[in-house]
Length: 293
Image (cartoon, rainbow, N blue to C red; front, side):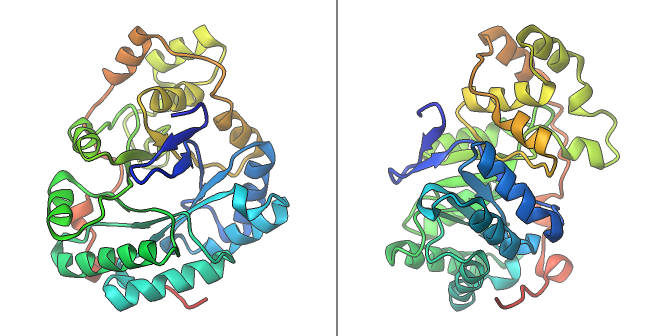
């Protein structure tokens, strides 16, 4: 791992911090992406299910930064699982993004109720990788049992597993499974944003432990959380549309947490998930058509 990049299990490098655009309204997405790229981000994470891939592409073009210097990550939604459907999902996403090649393409959910479709979808990712249409493939929200089933039936080990991960929900057992297979753990909601907008009992941003550590370093609680991810070898994709926050979330490479501070943050885990249980995501309840490009 260099200061700003992490090496995946296929040898490709990925910028360790990316801008996330989950729940960013399409009309705000282009400006957020362009601003992130202006302040130094080189990794943007989106998904077909976010309905803002087109605006991500606009923001990339608006930035004036060459495409080759930007790492583009997106995800296939469950409605497009299945071999041919997933190959077509790539075409839809690439066209909306305005790119020929996607740097990292993930399956958005494990879909255990129709894992046959998940396996066919992943085989399509393997084909896209073989054909050079994507540079790396991976998964999102896969639990240990989902990874076991996937690895038993496919040939390419996922490069990344993007999961909910913040000080209050750390999924340490899953992180260990990822590490054992050489899969990079990538944190969504890395600063516990999900603890703010769901009716949670407590917000990570108000945590006294995090605020104390932040004060010691002259940083914010959010910056401390992001630094914690980086020092523990994870990728993180914080989300914001506010220019000041976008810049703040990237300003995490100039300080170092002590072993004691890392341990104090590790001790904050409550085991309480903020997002939906991955096994509850089914075609019946969450299926929706992803429009053509």
